[in-house]
Amino acid sequence: MEKIATPIGIRLTNKVTNRYFELKFFNAAHFGREKMGKSIFNDNSISRNHCMIKLIKDDYWVVDVGSTYGTFVEVDGEDIACTSLVQLQNGGTLKLATIPFLVEYIY
Image (cartoon, rainbow, N blue to C red; front, side):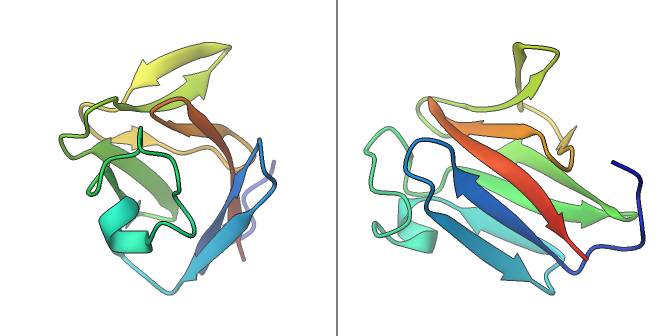
């Protein structure tokens, strides 16, 4: 997808349940059962404090913050572990443990 402008937020859609949530107007946000609540992340494989998503120069980046089962970005069909900052692609897949989420930038 062609970049339009600086995104104002991000939408993550669970690819299994089709449930989604949006976060707007943030520079950095922590994700996990403790931070987002069990209504969003109701799978125990997702840690209480799982990962952080950060806006850097018009793109969102993700890093695992010590989760039990890891944070991954799918690139060319392979899971890349987010042990350091990894760029999220608009339309790409973010996995918290084994749970896949569609990543959509909000403009």
